[in-house]
Length: 509
Image (cartoon, rainbow, N blue to C red; front, side, top):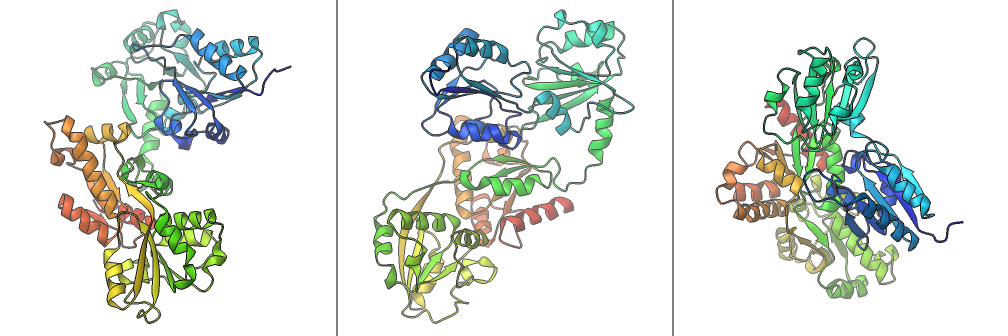
């Protein structure tokens, strides 16, 4: 009988990005009390756990400090016996070069409850994402997955006869592996592909043959990488050339708030783009709820509620609920929304707006307002730092009485995510997208702050070859003021419209 309610979940984290995580693994990360994770785990996954979850890095990367396996076993057992829900997060699949058996033996001996959650192994996924099939009716009837960590211990005479080889952890031993294959009859013209960071925005692929590949990767760190050797690599080239997705391979930075990046990223990814999240906004509650609370207390005095962002909708209704009220408190008040996403967010609350300005643009709200503004009282929950000054000015000029209250804060993050910064430094970015003026301003501030540590790099050289995509006129104006240019502007001022504009621009350039 188990003595406690603790449990250890040995989870495969897959390739790294959340999009390649299993649903079961995602659910368990959201509930973790203790997270014990390996070095190759993506920071993206670490953000899924609750804020009070204890995170312990036990990474075991070659050349760096290592946590002994005995210590890892001890941690798993101790926290489990203490009644905790422990997630042991491994990259790829726990049972493929993951030392999971050693940990399971320790858990079993300590009478700890555990569950194994499979993950997508890079051995299978990385070649697939590089459009390299591991089997083919003509070119490959079989494949083998092996570790290149200790090549001298392997039977190369047998391995050389297998159609396709998939090799992990071979960045430092590739020359030895190639020599062994050539020794036992593999052709010097045999095709080889090296896939580094498979499935991530930093993915790189080198292709060649056994005689020239070493020259192509000289001086390059290949960790972590998957190496494929066999004729299927050539087939992969043909399949890759047949891809028709309009944004195939384009690397696009998404600067929206961390809470809002998924939808836009998914739109771009469906068109073949590789997206990199670089949130230029952090959305948090206001420094004080007092203004909003006072306004909610006298809702019946207002004629109109103006909502210009999904954040405004969410925080307004969140506060309404905290104060013991619901949508019925808005009886008799008309609602106007700006922005398609704002309208959707309001609909999710069970309400339909009474007025939406043409094209969802705030600047057209006053001009097209459905009734006389004079004498009407407007409640405008907005970002604490202000915004929509033109809208407020025009409402006041038309005789309206506007009460502005802080409903949320929009702040600039402190740092650029390491993945995004590395991609920018290495000039891997094709397009940066901006969905608001604030994201433009904060993107500029983040880059300028980062460049203080790189006095030899200018902002102009850093962004050379990078194109800017704007969601609408206001954002475009800010981008032109700060960067002196905008390369494309959405014709429809929505995320879908911005996606379509990028597709058209890429097709014409």
